[in-house]
Length: 298
Image 1 (cartoon, helix red, strand yellow):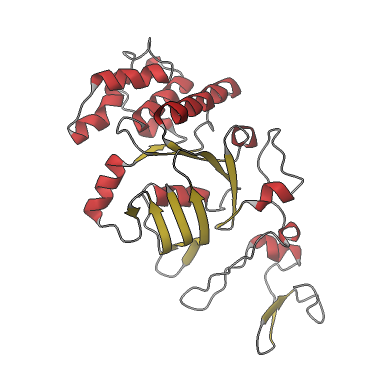
Image 2 (cartoon, rainbow, N blue to C red; image 1 turned 180 degrees about the vertical axis):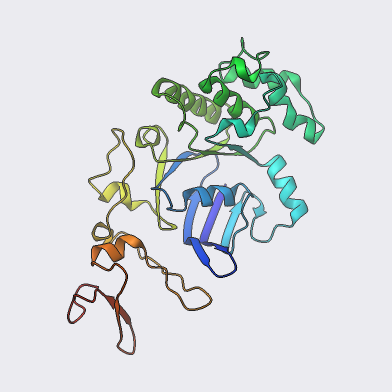
């Protein structure tokens, strides 16, 4: 369903380039229910926005089903977002119109495509446990109920891929469990592929597969190798720079004016704050802390 190889996403301003994804690799099979974990700034939301067609990739390969998102035209991108992908935000208000009922909210995307199916809209609200609340307006629904309406909306275009960005970030534990149960049911009943971005390991433990992302790169080794990551709850803390040894090779991207973007954790691990020494031996560039003689810690 998803294949990313060497995926790069660079955000540019007039005098700055920020590399959010730096050669990321990821494969997701059709019908999977999987989670992507990572700390803030790791690139997980950028990945989701790229898969959702909200951000254009800068380089590499990114394919979703038959769609090549690197080469897709603007017209095709509109078709892709209408027919292939559904999106759930952490802030459910982005998906809801307050002056409409829950049922009318679910029908709205159908109206945009000219294919309103009220029976299907009602079925979706039943699937998310809102059969008795479908005629209520936004202010009459709790936060958890609003999030369930948002899930129904994301499925109104019958997507093959559902992307969820911190879908339980603003609800309590009981509602979070309920929402994960809904995802599991939809995955099983509709066969929709579901990718959830989260920092909540409790939620991540309830999916079929977890992929960690760090500094714009993925590694399925993080969870297996790092004893500090458990599946018993709490925030997902990815390994320190020292713990990265043998886990993956980090590619440092060079921007157009020759600047290297070295992960902060690496600099902290060897005591680099605002200055560093740099040596070139003809084959390698060695970056060290100024306090270290001989560049032994690099």
